[in-house]
Amino acid sequence: MKLLHIDASILGGNSVSRQLSAAAVERLRKATPNLDVTYRDISATPLSHLTGEHLAAAHGATPETPAVREDLAASAAALDEFLAADIVVIGAPMYNFTIPSQLKAWIDRILVAGKTFKYSEKGVEGLAGNKRVIVAISRGGFYGVDTPAAAGEHLETYLRWVFGFIGVTNLEIIAADGIQIGPEQREKALVGALAAAGALQAATGQRAA
Image 1 (cartoon, rainbow, N blue to C red):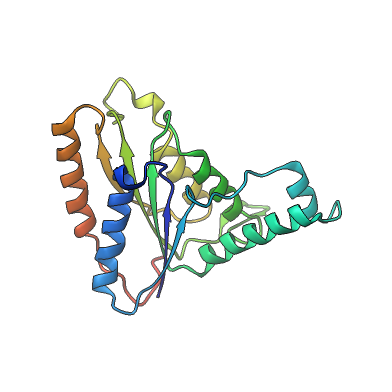
Image 2 (cartoon, one colour):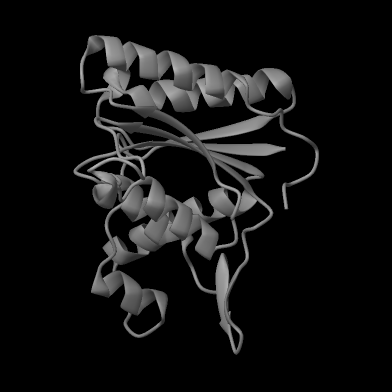
């Protein structure tokens, strides 16, 4: 069984989402001794954002330059890691109401027609629904449906849509909310979210449907 661990926070050791994603991976690792874990820190080693040159070369419209060839190789490696994983754990902090741009760059490399989704006469069909995806979220404020800021929540809502688009409809969310409200709320949110990470269902030998 293979697990892909992605971290996107730019805050290093001060990151709540990194603590949560690490706790989730540790929980699954302890429960599954043969778990093969691949780690990608997309903040420390970010993928470049898509360019017209990249897309043109990927579709064979223009010759590949050395720089584009290197970028296409990085893109293929990110996609291959995702396709090979049975479980994906993502540390995703909220920055200005949405995901970090580094995480968007990674998502742009895994949403590939013919690989993780396809178009047909019936519409879009997700091809990655056999994966278990766990997202560890940290948000500075409160963005629940019953809060004044609910309309500004474009982190969890976006990720649910993106992964649902490629077939992962049972996204598992671990969230620490209000971490910028004050020290007490930060600690309360972190303790609760770490407990949720520690209670994750153990990995099994079968990919989740």
